[in-house]
Amino acid sequence: MKPLALDPAQPRRDFLKKLSAASLAALMSPAPRLLAADPDGEPVTAPRARADACILLWMGGGMAAPETFDPKRYSAFEKGLPVSKMLSTFPAINTSVDGLRICQGLENVAKVMDRATLIRSAIQPDLGSILHSRHQYHWHTGYVPPQTVACPHLGAWLARVLGPRNPVMPAFINVGQRLEGHGESEELKAFTTAGFFGNEFGPMNLPDPAGAAAAVQPPKGMTPGRFGDRYKFYRELIDRNPRREYLSDHQQESMLRAMDNAHRLLSSKERAAFDLALEPQEARDAYDVSHFGRGCLLARRLVENGARFVEVTTEYVPFFHWDTHADGHSTTDRMHREIDRPIARLILDLEARGMLDRTLVIVASEFSRDALIEGVPGSKAADQATAPSDTLQEAKHYGLHRHFTGGTSVVMFGGGMKRGHIHGATAEERPLIAVKDPVTIRDLHATIFTAMGVSPKTVFNIEQRPFYATEDGKGVPITSVFA
Image (cartoon, rainbow, N blue to C red):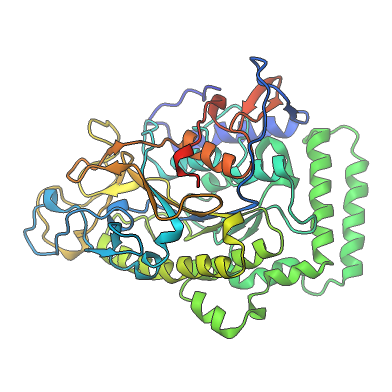
């Protein structure tokens, strides 16, 4: 399916208008229908599932591979250091895999890399302009925005095709990302959705993992009986709207089923999974190093209780966290501390509970970073950084600031992946592009879907045309990473 025409200089407002139009069209469209064969008549068969659940640890903002999982030549800060000599600003450390090194600051993750497959050759297109919102939309849905339909999030695909693991637990839960109150809130909302599948397959959003328990309780001052009365009244109100002015029958019925699911959760024992206070103090202390760390603990509890797909984010807010346009080195040093212990503890906890083999844990970001190059060599994309391109004069310019799409790292634990395996490579000297076994988003998604037992060619009929799990159904799984 071809995206709508988009001028690289198109204002964000126009971009959002097109996304809003696509969303409205999806709301008015009939129910999408799962097809047993693709348009060429080839049968769509599900692969053997290696995993039952998936946890996506999202490094929102552009995690620099040379500062995390793909260290290059290290240069310490000194005034007058040529920027062209700055590849990594952290030295490399050994891991539990012979010959595999990652960056200083990830010492705990280094100890569990023998449970991981490390993809060092993920690549992304420039998309005309290298903006976080466009690349995050592409990564999470598999489609370049904007589209003529509202594209479902990866988690919504798994919720729709596989269904819930536990009928009481939401199949798709999004942890740690505020969708209000900052400069790209609307763009994030555009892909944090079930799209044309309907509300019942959309995410349960939990911006604050520490306050998740409050999300599964009736509003303050409202008794369960009063909550039930309000729910009943809402159903009657929907049923009395024969004109269906704003929602198709499918979307209205999906919304009601979403409310049914929420009502069932509020009265279930599984709602205790949302309460971090029920964890032993030692476990809380291990994760309680950051907002993200608490999200990792919550993800473990949710998957233990039957969630199908949980995304935990370091949170994308422009110019914060991994969005290191200034003070790159010091910010990345802080981000190391925020993710290192929680990721390692999550892997060890899943393993200790006998869950790691059937849980796919992914660490990923929308693109990498470079000190000099925006996008890839030859890109006409506008430079997003204000850092100098000649020599360093101030410590705040030490680090990797520019968006780089030519070589990105993705880490995958459990879920049928090989242990202690490295796939692909990037160049040792700039430009740090993938030079061995490059992996596109389409093929990365095909690998994730295949691990979860979903064919990358899974296709729905939407608005009388096919819409695939991977773009045009052409995603090819990286079979060499499977054990």
